Amino acid sequence: MGLRFMSIQDQKQEEAAVLEVVKGVHDAWNKADPDLFVAEYLEEATATLPGSFMKSREEIRGAMAFLFNGPLKGTRASEKVLSVRFLNDETAVVITETGVLIPGESEAPPERTAYANWILAKRDGKWGVGAYGNSPSVGPGQQ
Image 1 (cartoon, rainbow, N blue to C red):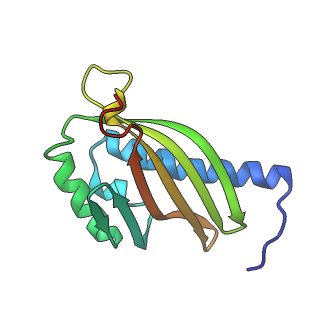
Image 2: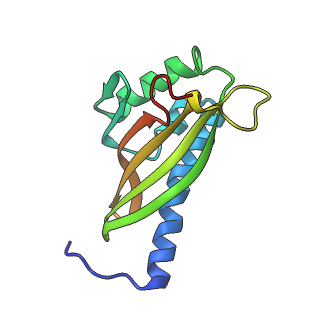
């Protein structure tokens, strides 16, 4: 499991695979499907959001099921990738700007936009989300 230097071609292929995982999570949000939402999460994945910490894929699934049927019902997620870095051959960090879109919106306002950190791990040749955390893109009073 030592660090090796990927060729540019390998890095592009791995980056595409990592971004496909992130896209899959957002696509699942847009379908309001909590099972599909966590399909790319590792069993021991964590999620940290303002005011909450979830310590397993099952906890994340449960939270998303509640949200998709309540506060996030009918919403979609926008996604803008800001950064992709590989810490080694089996660990990637992706930073995104994610917005919560209500029906009819094509862009989320700052108060419904967050910067997200995705930590992905490669297990048995497949990338999965090991940890996710986000922070509002604006602080109180900054809109």
